[in-house]
Image (cartoon, rainbow, N blue to C red; front, side):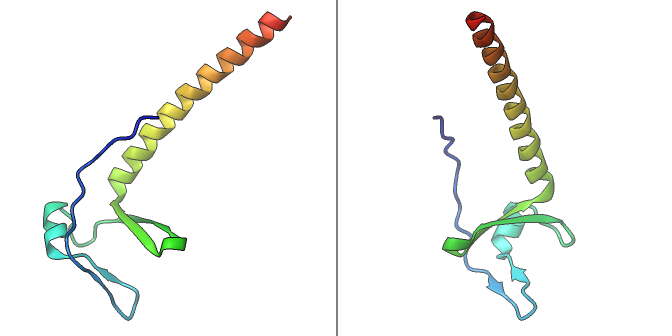
Length: 89
């Protein structure tokens, strides 16, 4: 299996306020170009009390990319099953 290694950056510590709002450190907001009003996707690992915050547009782009590859894999598997069935008949 192929794993992609990407740059990881630690931006400091944010804080969860009384209304559940998370403050993203200024350095992260600047480097990642997060602007007030931007929509972000929040995903997490509940057992590890961890979250990932991603720009909504980036998340949708990654999702579309993954869907394209799943569709391609589905087509390949379908062809292989048809070929295997044809060989059995």
